[in-house]
Amino acid sequence: MSTTVTVRDATSDNIGPITAIYAHHVESSLATLAKDIPSEPDMHKRINDIQKKSLPFLVAISSATDDEEIICGYAYADDWSARGGYAPAAEDTIYVHPDYQRGGIGKQLLKALVERLLSCKGKTQLLARMFISPGRKPEVLAPCRLHTSLSFKLVGRMEEVGLKLGQWVDVVIYQLDLGKLRAKGESRSQRRSVEATSALVCESTGCVLSTMDERLGNAGTDMGDWRS
Image (cartoon, rainbow, N blue to C red; front, side):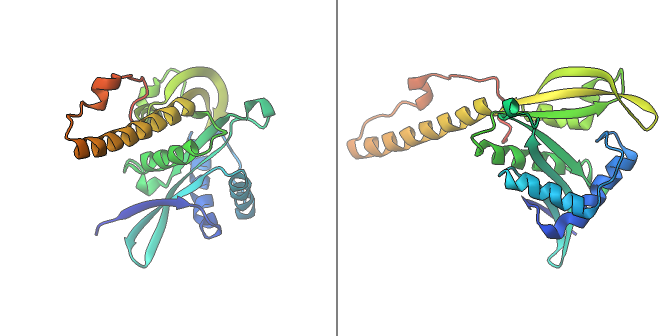
């Protein structure tokens, strides 16, 4: 049976499954350093608070049949810090249901999250914290590989700042420059508009049109095309 996964905004109907997914990671993983499981009303408030800021709180829905929908993961962005000076920075959070891990859902959620944040002009940087055992290399951790694949850069590591499940925990921090990514998208849009206009002019005049890259040059960027 084929399964289709779609991503959309979270609603109040999703509170139970979202809380259950989070509870699993609180109890049994280092995906979060939280040790207390919130109640469903607390989770509902958390979602509302984020959405009131016009920030995304998304769910991934697996539809095995037309009548069955399963919340197989969720993701959201919130302020990096409550202090006003950090207003341009956001932090992403992603949790996937244990039965749906390693199926590309985390990447689908993160892509959708970044897309939404690109339309949020007030946010210019997106940060992510991952928790890892001391001595382990970030590239062995799936969430770290996920963020790297979407052009996040490793910008720091704090050693043994956490303690969970009887072990010390390091925190690694990844960063994506939304401002540069947004400018890159706007530049592409402008280039396509100019190319389309030039093509129409040349069609009517019979001129030979050089490519936009030949006329403008390849500006290049160190930002990978995370949309691919």
